[in-house]
Amino acid sequence: MTAITGADTAATAEAVKFLQTRHRFHWAEVLPWVIAIAVFYLLPGYRLLATQILVMILFALSLDLIVGYAGIISLGHTAFFGTGAYITALLAANNIPDPLIGLVAAAIGAAVLGFLSGWVLLRTAGLTLLVLTMAVTIMLGELANDFDEITGGFDGINFTNSEIFGLIEIDQLWYTSSYIYVLVVLFLSFLLIRTIVHAPFGRMLIGIRENTKRMSAIGTPVHQRQVLVYVISAAIAGIAGALWVQVQGNVTTGVYAFELSGDVLIMIILGGTGRLYGAFIGATVFKILESLTEQILGTNQPYWQLTIGIVLILTVLFARRGLYGIFEDIGEKWKDRSQ
Amino acid sequence: MSKPILETRDLAKNFGALAVTDNVNFALAPGARHAIIGPNGAGKTTLINLLTGALSPSSGSVYLAGGDITGMAEYQRVKNGIARTFQINTLFMGLSVIENLYLAISERMGVATSLVRPAGKDSAVMEEAVRILNILKLEEDSLTEIHELPYGRQRLVEIAIALALDPKVLLLDEPAAGVPTTESHIILDAVDSLPKDIAVLIIEHDMDVVFRFAERITVLVRGAILAEGSPDDIAANEEVQAVYLGEGSHD
Ligand SMILES: Nc1ncnc2c1ncn2[C@@H]1O[C@H](COP(=O)(O)OP(=O)(O)OP(=O)(O)O)[C@@H](O)[C@H]1O
Ligand SMILES: [Mg+2]
Image 1 (cartoon, each protein chain N blue to C red):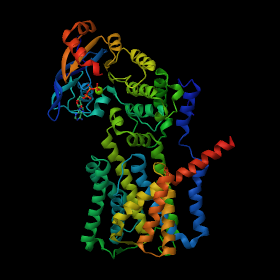
Image 2 (image 1 turned 45 degrees about the vertical axis):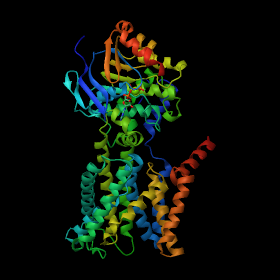
Image 3 (image 1 turned 90 degrees about the vertical axis):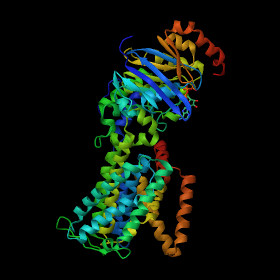
Image 4 (image 1 turned 180 degrees about the vertical axis):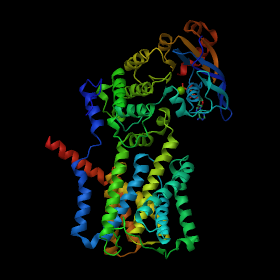
């Protein structure tokens, strides 16, 4: 740790130390990855569900960047997920089946869409922004349905990926290599996101969330920065969409489903916004609940919506910082006791 | 008076039919200690908002060191040396004092978009944050979140952030507003000890403070400049006395 001139009182020294060490890894941060690997070996029957959860975690992480960190509330994040999905699928169906090229193209395509829509939409805020992001997504969904010669409509397009690095095949049946593939992409993306939020850029986003008026008054071009994080977030959402279809070898206009925008927002509220691990918990709980409700009560929509509605109400009432907030509280108590 | 650092020419701002800033020709000298006084609703805060670019004028122009900045965005003016405090605290309420300063300084030093190195590792920013904490004697509250601080301490953070921007011009909008009189001296002491090379424009209702601090006073009434001059001129001005006898009582 670098000594900071002038930090002479105990209080300033403590503050400096806190800021200098905040980004360090906590041992508990290995847990999600240990669990993910344990699931792979111990519950092979659940690999399909687990793969879906991993992709949703990435999608939720991308949304947390704008909602939880920058305070930009969006109900249209499927626009980027769907665009990433279609770019990858269309490339693969047109003789560019390399999955990594697919990921990169998805990220770039979604980022471009993020830039174009963000530049205009982010001049608004709050409810207006919510409605506009929603409108863009619904519009893209409609376009995808109308141009079903290209998109395949409800039936979709089937495609095959080539091997990763010409070596590893993404198996679409047993979710073996494809599970590992998704896990690795999630892990690398997470490291990237974690780095960003601990860097000055991430702190700046929190400033925008806390007070845009004050941000302008300290010299921040708020709109530009909002667009910047929107683009980054869109790119990651695009990667999530690409993964989603790569492991299935199929894409339908369902990837533009507006409901998915709501689902992913619910996931981060459930897990806790602005804290990254909320996305892990929220996506996992959401998908497991969804699958349990289906098993117990059948696939009838009302039951599932009722269940998630009740869970959401309970979270908002009793766990304001989401389920991850509860873990934080337990961690704090534990630390207090051991001191 | 030497060449002004900040100047307005025929500056006007209307809210609908209401002329809130009415052809104001105002100049602030480098290193000045200048006060704006005027009754409630005279348009003092609006004038500051026009100077910082938080509002754009209906007509007229604003000059910084001789250059026209009328069309310049607020954030860009900050980078060019105009800092302000708010009449009502406008802080990052959920963040600690040191983080409030960190944000201002990292923006000023141009590292706010850096994506890789952990924020706390930037020693230049950290040293500057600690320096400002020390100047305003906020050390003990370094890690306290703003919403946990008493209002008076929060007012100090307003000034601290403005100082952290290393301004040429500092616009203080009633820095002691909302603070109990028993504590306001802490804030006014901080204002008194601001570096001499910064031009300070202060809006203040307490006449004792104004006459002790200011070398020059502008009186704003219903958006227009009623009088301007040295504290002695203003004290002797009959029009000003009339306004303050007639309207000052509902302050
Ligand atoms: N955004 C706005 N829209 C409409 N009217 C406004 C707006 N902002 C200010 N006003 C009006 O303009 C007038 C001047 O307001 P301003 O806040 O500049 O006064 P002030 O001199 O700072 O008063 P105070 O001493 O109470 O702070 C007031 O009548 C106020 O109601
Ligand atoms: Mg005012």
